[in-house]
Image 1 (cartoon, rainbow, N blue to C red):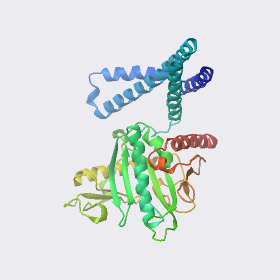
Image 2 (image 1 turned 135 degrees about the horizontal axis):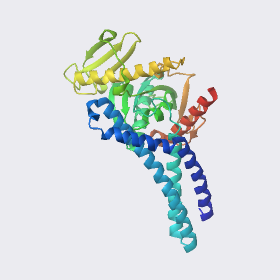
Image 3 (image 1 turned 30 degrees about the vertical axis):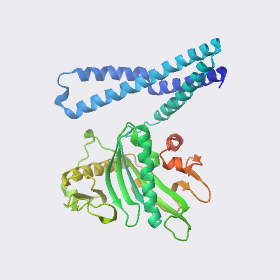
Image 4 (image 1 turned 45 degrees about the vertical axis):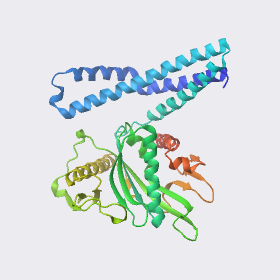
Length: 371
């Protein structure tokens, strides 16, 4: 890219960054940081541990947010100087360095722009993701496992910790269902656009006649609860069943009844956990996921939204939101945003940021239109 082209890109990125700074309202954030700093300095802060954790967590996040924007602005200014230097010295190596920095800044500023669109009440939270196989038999179970790997690889690419909470293996291959946490800022807001029915079309590796098979899997994404959410669940509202944890093919991985299934009687919600080592740990993990689902249900009721929980998606014909086609051609396409790529292998290897960004922008446009 020539020096003048880089300058044009710098101007465009500068306008985008200015828009981000306006949306974030940096003076307001700095004022809140100062107020939180005073609260952190108070000697009685940790008398209320839940509030102390909320304050310190909020302060850390806001500092990181302001620091990120400030550094991007500084790098953009430095890039302009670098381009001037490259042109004055007629230095190809310096110009190449400027090109690399311009590309890096474009990627980071675009990612931050998408982040500013995540303004929902729970968007900042960690995410709890559940994948369930749908119509399609063993191919659907295999597809559910492919989606699990896709999300795990995506999290690995970004350095996000993941904790698998519950795994139910299918008899022949793949997964009946799996639930896992993604622990990262804005994990829920980012991954919530993945909720819905995913459809796979391919030559079935499980069909000895080599026929094309269509299979489905449902993805549910809910926000992880925090200490301050206060979702009370009376013991009379739940039924707790214990059973023996098992691995693939029904092989025992635990000689005690450590797995836990909790049924919320008023709503019918069921949560199973078996990946922790003890019954107490599995019960605590199951209660946390149940509370998260009830929190989302409460939010939907408060907003008078007439839609079902993501977990009620049929995972069959007619309601899919994304198609993964491996035969007769290669394509992954989101049916809501029209975003598509021609490399399914890369997508299944965790390269889904384009789909996430398009989904977040699509949702914001839909929200603006309905408002």
